[in-house]
Length: 236
Image (cartoon, rainbow, N blue to C red):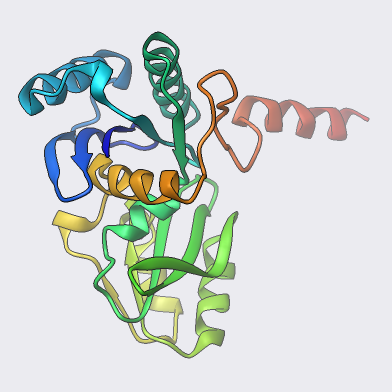
């Protein structure tokens, strides 16, 4: 099976090509460039370097959220366009799954943290069992202190990764009583390679959809909408 994968859910933009046995090509950029400018050229590059014609891909895997609203829309539109043009199914891979799978060899709890602003994170917690992700805490948007409390209750050692681990490093170091460590830089951010591998796994489990059906998962409303609702509550 051959999959083209995209992840533009955060600051990092990434595209990859994988089959059942290996990552064939990957292009990842983490320098705050605009995803609308970089993603399609990256996709074009990994496809060319893999020497696999677009028509031979079995599916398009895409990081489906949560994450940056703009980044998710760009990734979703790109995946949908490819899926519709090629008549290929899309495999939505939760962003937090893809991030956690970067540390699939870790034996404790894996906790991806994505900065959601206002002292909140998009997060979840996982174990790896038989090579697959098993939820310890389901994905959600929550306060950083709240997720630390939930993790402390497990009594297990935790590996933190993601841009939220960078943003809230001091909070984690100062306020948590759990045994923890931070993932090293080479596995600490999103990667389309991880999305590709999970995409193959999820496709075989029947977890795919048509390009027309695909919608990103935001977990919470856009900031502008939240601020409008807050103003209405105050004015009301």
